[in-house]
Length: 115
Ligand SMILES: [Zn+2]
Image 1 (cartoon, helix red, strand yellow):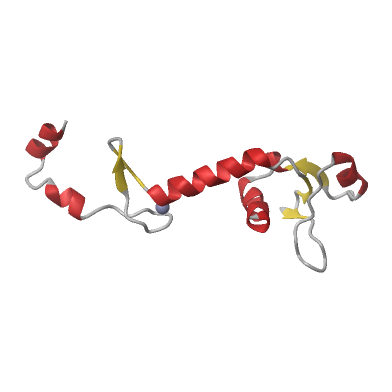
Image 2 (spheres, helix red, strand yellow):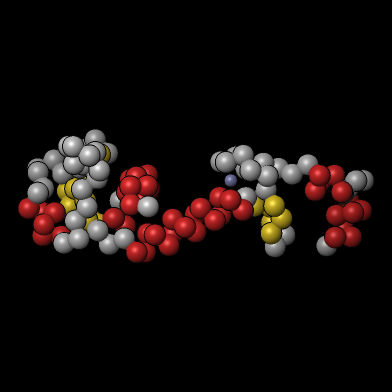
């Protein structure tokens, strides 16, 4: 494989000297198992996935406005460990929804609050 690249490119060393940069975080990408990847973004994604599995809480979600119900004073998202408690607090325009069924941006909002 390396030989093929060398024949195809007059100066293959240049590839390594001028790395591509990640579109998301601007970090220089690295070669990993023959693929050019952003190590920083991969690590962040893995962290998110780990947290996702751990969080089984419920929230009140206003789908029409893409908004989670928060405490008035602190601005923290209200989390419920028990579904029935969430249902007791739920207004007509809201729905009780488990963390893992939320849109990704809302999951990240909660993760930022917890960790
Ligand atoms: Zn990145």
